[in-house]
Image 1: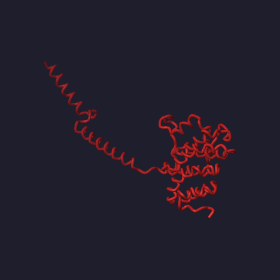
Image 2: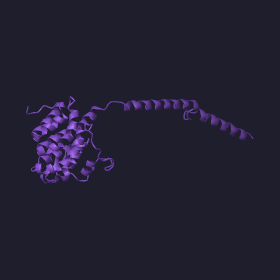
Image 3: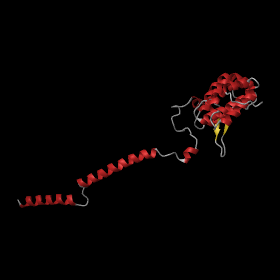
Image 4: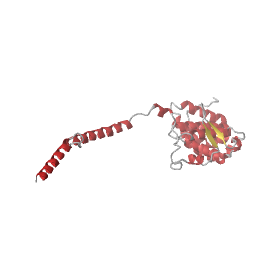
Amino acid sequence: MSTSKSGSAQSRTSSLGSAGSCSSSTPPSSAGKNNSAKARKTAATASGGGAKQALPPKPSQRLNPRTVDPFANSSKGQSAFASVYANGGVPCRLIHGSVKHKLAWDTPPEQVPFDPVLVTLAEGLKETVHPYTFVSCMGFRELLDTPQATQKATPMLPKLAPPLRAALGHTDSSVFERGIDGLMQLSAVVGPALNPYLKTFLMALSKRIMERKYKEKVTESLQILEQNGGKDALPIIKSKVPTYCSVSG
């Protein structure tokens, strides 16, 4: 009988001792405080996360061009030009230099068929991410610099006019600038043969000439179109841009 009472007393003592020891679990009141602190911390983090999203872009983000992610899905969301370029439809590749980039052609540019490569490059002028922006404008220029470019490009004008017009009418300023450069390069190569297509480009140019940023650039392009198009180009230009002053006075 004494042994049973002693065992019960020891059991009660053991229970009390473990409940009051330093290694015991956190009391309910303390656990409630911790939970409240965690809740406040979570709420603060959530509100802070929203503030971070509203921060302006870093200087490095403004200076570096938008670049295609090489680890992204190669087929998902690709433009037509990006898909053709990735599949080898444009026989050149980008060479990264320490000062500037350049193109290396798998086939000499003078041997590259203008149909369809020149048309594909013209369509690529609408690209907004690197390296497609560089490849399209540089490839377009280098093909037009090849011998016999006039004979090769002139029959392609019905296919070249739509993508150039699309680039000139694009809302992205860098696309517009590549489009106007491409138009001047093409005008220098095909000359008066471009006159039947001038109205296609002049509507977009007439809108931009009203912007101070592009007034000088657009005026220069109109002068080049007139010089290369001959006397028949001036009345076409004046019909769409009445304020234009002829270079011939």
